[in-house]
Length: 188
Image (cartoon, rainbow, N blue to C red; front, side, top):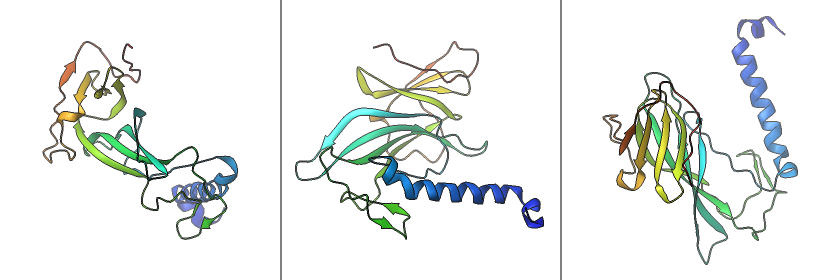
């Protein structure tokens, strides 16, 4: 380690992690059938696939949706998010031999635009520890919060872009828990 490295240990760690990530990403075609990556502005403590899947007759891909939640710093707004994800159909031929140096990615399946797109943001009070959809009604989503409450949102009743005032307006606030948590499930 040089003197500069000792002065900036966080930067050295960042460079090391970044280099390891580049090596992993370059080798993904040999390890996985498909890898879709998308950098979020803030980390998410929860991810859940929604069960609906759209398949267009003349396309080689399907569109599915994900639930995500943000974990921001103290003064930043948190959101419950719904994202659209484009995935190749099972019989779509992927070309994993091609490596794009500019994008540092391998392969592709015909959809050159971004494969993950956040389609809805709902203001959320505090970080979203867990988000789960209701099996009987996929538009109802419960979230576990840092305040120990459970919020229930009907995402079909909320706009795609969250209001700028930051006001959290769940359809239901379930109270009774004493502390925050991470476990959350609907009864089937």
